[in-house]
Image 1 (cartoon, helix red, strand yellow):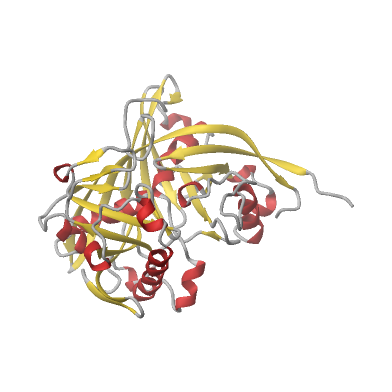
Image 2: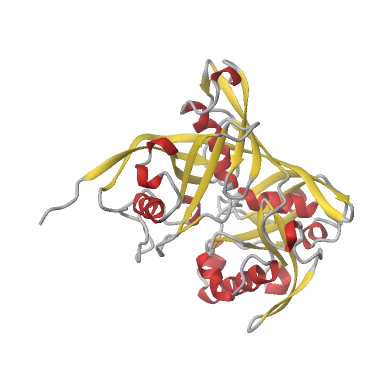
Length: 396
């Protein structure tokens, strides 16, 4: 019996923020995978090691968490005013699908670095020393991200003293600007608040009715008060991920929230859209001990936030959800703003399971609609390995 040989595909394994993923240049992919479709999805599933009924992704590059089961495809941009097109695929761990419905804010921090190193950015726009400004078109959601990438002696600077809670070692700081982060294509005719309300009564049969802020900014997100769910907002991963009933409850809330936001038309569609929307619960500041053992004092933060990604409590905070947090915190009357003290603000520092994070956003009302022109936060990124990934030639 003949067996297909493995093929080699140029790839780079990178950390961006508190996530890791496999990065590809579009032109390096096999021809059938250079376009959206079944072949591309099958290839990425095999690269990452999914679907894996053991939930370990032993036979692939994935790390068996939503933060490490990710893929990125980059290409030179043909869109005016942009350097690179960025397409993100969230690879399911135990199911045979890739979710293309949203962005990864954490891996966005690595896009500029990869693009420069891969020659996807005009060399004339990259200083020998200083900061390169990389204009990124986020193709999943049709948004612009601007990455400020430090350069030293003609190369991307990756080492430094910037510390990011959720990442063990310091690195160089990469500032990200998310331009006009509110959604335009999905839910509510393009409104940041798809229901038209800052707070809704979200009815979840079999679970309860909760006050919720439903927002499309950075990524569609459902915010609920922690106390309404029986939590304090100081929980770490084990308190949620070790409780199957809690995970089932959150998935039910997510499905009904997606329906209310207009992201899906039928409840059963939620299972095929795991990446979005996110569910997060918020609380007023309180003392707690982060997963690293670091003591977080109530005075260190403006509020507490815990968020779920791909069915599990995130170990830190998704970058796109941080944009949603910053945006909602800037708008008086949202649950996020209320948890942060109910005062007007253009930046917020929130506590998450791994520590704290600061994100800035300025919101204004235009013709009765809330508008946020830009959200800003800092992350870091680093190449972990580069070379080739190998997959069986008949895997896609």
